[in-house]
Image (cartoon, rainbow, N blue to C red; front, side, top):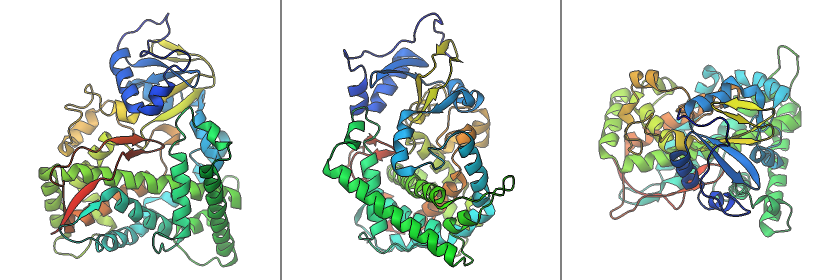
Length: 450
């Protein structure tokens, strides 16, 4: 870590009177955080919404907050706002409730159970791409969003999504769009104002809740042998307390998994296809691997995910450059020593996967898309805390295994049958950092059938 004085408050980038860095963060948070790390060092002091925020950009400090001293930190304000729709699911719950829920849900995400969903993931990827025409242009972000929604609805609820008019999908879209602006320090007031967007949001939440509660009642009235995650959660029982989840807790976990799960997977796949379309050599290597693994078979299966090593390298690199979850916030519950600085009780700290994972100290040529960097030797030598797209510690993403299976099999299935090219004259796509890291416009890609 860069040496800093322990007697002074950390340095920070230039700030505006009264509003500090709030307007800069609202307009372009990635630019602000990247500049803060570059100019101010591993600990930078920001002023957001009238509050001090310690921005930490060294892997050692990431580990301190997420793992080593995790008990000294609570969730930040942004997570509390998410409770309005997510309730107390794994993302927003804390303390004993989070520990109990994670223990209850862990068996549901065992590899043996997750692998049962592989045919659904592959089948939906094939069906989605059957709608494409060779030589046409598609918006891969819209396509991957629709695909991930269908997979999520089927695997979570055993719900078959029809088309864009599907009420559940439409309501989820309304909910996610409303929350896409919630990171701004100026947007919290909109939750209380009688705005059309607020009314649409609350109406969508009510309808979505009604649909989930109806499914819960149907499953309990007719406990058939189902493999969807809703049925498994209803059957889950804590061996230590003999406790099962009540309907409200099941609802909170399901909307968390559906909303957060499909959004992050869609973004990961869209950004990865964007990068592949601009890197013909990587796409050729991926095609060669898919052909070798298939060996003449018509489609992949769950066991192939472990054999698709280059596909995993491609995804690792895509997640490094464009992590769907691009920031993590925590609040100090007591005075905490982090490196040379003491963080006062009640102060928020901010970590950014986007910033740390593009740091040249840990990744050579950090802005280049180089899947081949992810060798076993490189991963063993990588500084702990320098790569954390799924977070770390006790709040490490419980669905990581599910996400890896889905993204690997979907990517391989699409790459085996389609070539992706950047349209002539196309420019780089920028980012829109909201709850997840979205593109700032449609990602147009030309598809050619193999």
